[in-house]
Image 1 (cartoon, rainbow, N blue to C red):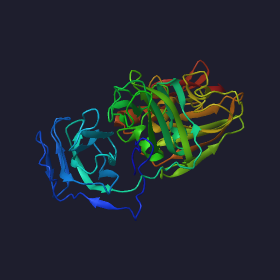
Image 2: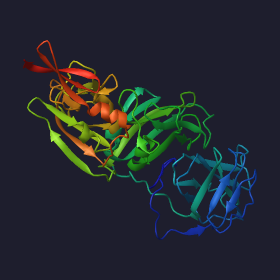
Image 3: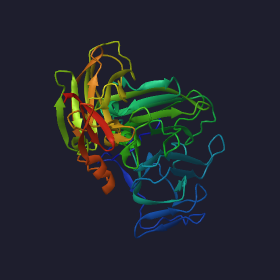
Length: 440
């Protein structure tokens, strides 16, 4: 899996087989390091005991005039990683090093060598934003420009600018539509230095969790930083602990947020047909019935990891994040409900994703699974017919029943019929439900 393509006007992609390449070697990192940073040549593991105060790499004192970039590949980064190149001469501002930051989860980092100083490279080294271990896979200098994966493709503005110039919400369903995403961020100040964070990408509305840092790659007031991100990586940023995060409004996806004291979010565009990189099995669970609804029983919900609600928006005036349908405990229309919302504006087919755990919650009333007049438990899904039509519901992946204690199972499965004042009731799980139309 490739990671963030974050260089000013180019993107890291497959390397040309004919490109000149210099292997820096993983047998032993020649720089002895500092701050207690250690390296195991046997496992190619670099261990950082502290944040930013230690580092290790390759002491070169070499002429790299024949090369254009330095690339280091590694297993998924456990923290933000800084790749640094030290030159033996300073630039006009007195700096003798350049740093490129990549976020946690990244698989590589790359720096474009300064054409005026690449004949005097002192060393290349790595640092980390937190104590961690990083397993290296390759390190090399290479010639030739990186390939831009979206060259020649037409971009489409995606997501919803919830705070123009600062924050964009990119729903999971939209992420799955495109192969790549291009984010443009303009610097407000010269304080946006090379490698410094100018923004981040987080699982939707989860601002306090680990984020993917957008490192400045084109410093200077008014200059534009460009980031190209693959669909598979954007999907990873939407996850917490390996599962897609759902916020309090039932939304899944990412928030792209820039630090408004340093930069302005210019645009977020999608490129290419993404399809779905999710290889889990997909099962059609039924089309809408004559009433425009799909019913999912509890045992069906437990059989899958998540659910895709496919709707056809018929009203072109529908806006992004408008309510277009609801999910209720099965056949309980006047009870609690969850309203699902459009993922983008305008007419056409859309897919709304709901996690298994959330779908199970929507089947409950006051924390207990609701049972309808036919002794069924589950949910009913419908669409607002003045805005759209419910096409179908798809189950994704193979799930497993929620773990329950024996007492919970006995209580939920305990059913008895009770006659009160000539009305037949069903009691299940401690709750009592009227059997409509059964008068004795």
